[in-house]
Image 1 (spheres, rainbow, N blue to C red):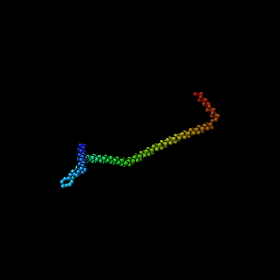
Image 2: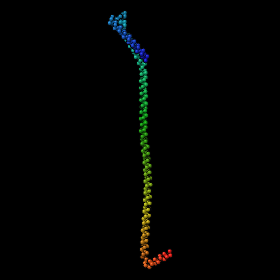
Image 3: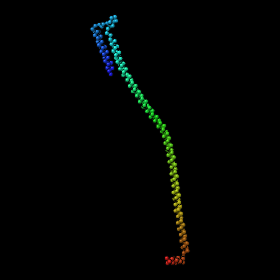
Image 4: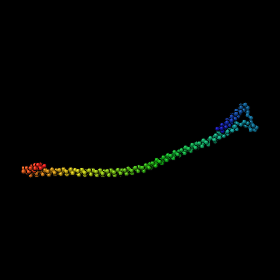
Amino acid sequence: MKKLALIFMLSSVAIFAQESAEKKAVEHKVGEEPKTAEGDGKPVEDFTTWKWVNFFLLAAGLGYLIGKSAPKFFKDRTDSIQKDMAESARVAADAEARVKAVELQISKLGEELARMKAEVRTDMARESERLQIDGTKAIERISTHAEQEVELAAKVEMLGLKQYAAQLAVDLAEQRIRGRLNGETQGRLIDSFVQDLGKN
């Protein structure tokens, strides 16, 4: 900052010197002829030198400022660009990693689908086997129940037939007994019955 102020002061002095020289030149033009050096014919006060000195001072000041500020500016700019490039590379690497992760998941998706299909097939086979076993057991239960019902019906029918046969036998015996029973047989039976009552 101090160097900048020094350059500004030098530039101001040079400009002030140039302006005062130009004022003197104007005064010489207005009042009298300017003095010339012997043999050249040029005016003694040549302002071109002051202009060049002023130019070189300004150029040196600007060169110094640019030389001092430019490297820092360009270094900061380069650092910023490198930082942005590093960030971009990091983002690109992150995006690439995400793409690879997605591709890996997609490739695993096929394997996962195949595994799920195999599991479904296995489950279906197990379920089919279970249903077949349950169906066989149900058929066996129904068959056993039907056999039991048939046996029960057969027993009921046999019992009915036995009852019918017994009834027929009783009816037949009754008919035979009635056929053999006459007045004399009835009297004997009654006498026998009365005697048994008397003994008891």
